[in-house]
Length: 624
Image (cartoon, rainbow, N blue to C red; front, side):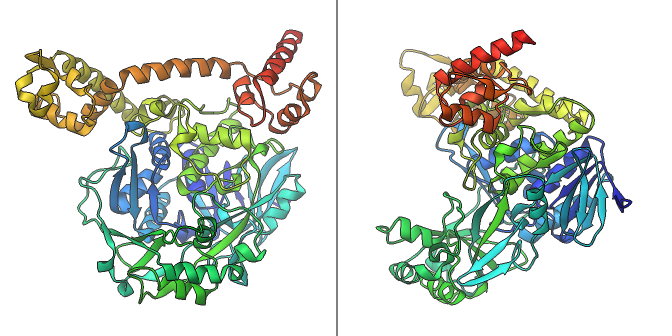
């Protein structure tokens, strides 16, 4: 092997959200990371919608932040609009969404990494995974430069075998205007990995100066601005509004008349796209009876007039895009600054990775982000952080860090990938979590602070400060149980207490049809000393309001953990099991589950199959 041009502990291929979080996790754990990326000035550049968060995605951002990650801080610091979603529903589905300045977000990440002593960035395109003694030991770039390492993390996004489609036009590219990584796909195949192809897309960008916003519905931000990161502080800024508009009957006609000019329908694209974010062609085809679809007009940043028409992803020819976009309400004079396009890219079906993100076939090689079949910046960031932590633990000979489904949405996502190996771009929803009342935005640090401390992902003083918040929450809960107020002072709420003169504040909080926010405001009115920290008061109010539900869910979690504790040894031979139907046996061999609980979540496996597996597992353990 040629003498290495660079030596590092972990080499990370890709400078997107997954790659950045992976490198930073490695650095926080005291090891050196080198990011190999095409353009060092475009770290974490938002290729699609310049927004972070939303349903379930915001939960992941909060979890990554609790583990010391950067995505939440970057969004908070570069946001131009802040919103909280689902506040009329229970706290399990409350979500935060921040519209960021696209260029400022990437620059924030670039500047932040420049200050990290254990992170370096190398511009180049990875072409080959290097191996030694059956382990990944580095990468070779297309220019021939070698980077040797103890572990390799691939976070390639859409650049792995990327192919852009606009009508009949095809461009080999990982992102508009940037080359893809094609020899790296060949390297993976040569190492015995199974590759597949997925598709995603993006809408055209519009010149906001040519849009008639008066015809659209104003979508303002929320005040005060909500934050993702506990480290963030208030900053002076004027929120920029988004706008809501809709397609017209003429939009439908133009798109429908040109279905066959779209590579999605002409047969040029055969790979599967995201079910929950379809192109405008898909929408008019799949929902043929609908005459109109919503389009959200979202600004790309403060320093640009460019607008992202969320909901109008397309791969139609440019001239058809131009005709169609000008039939949308308010966009009659709109000018395109960049056409929309579809992009196909290679991915590694995730049955080939362990819950630690390490590949089964090649020790020392970890995968994170879209290469595992996911979509979204948030999903990528969560995987990147976990891959970074586990790469360091593998180097140091320690047990991997694996979050289970009851601990985090990150755990739900990775378990879904490993046990189901998605064949379409995977997106997180709160409905994917069985224990979503226990996996709220507000308690991410409660769930993960112990791990952040254990793996040195955050400074000890930050961990200690949060333990003070937990203590303060318990103190406030006790105070709310003791504090009594006159029923006559409760306004309309007093009608619920016709036989009582006094009531405790915790009883008031438990009343139905009063929101957590209303309850918090009432408490602030009756006892300002209890409400001196609104974060603590909201935490206490949620704990009081949902105490019974939370306790019930905890019993379910305890049962789940008992099943997860029945581990399947790495040397267990699934093919030796007799008495199983062929489908279950093939699934066990294919997915290699690590516990009985995980085996039971594999699609097509029945309780009877688990019973047979349990018997053979017991025999295996006794023989050992």
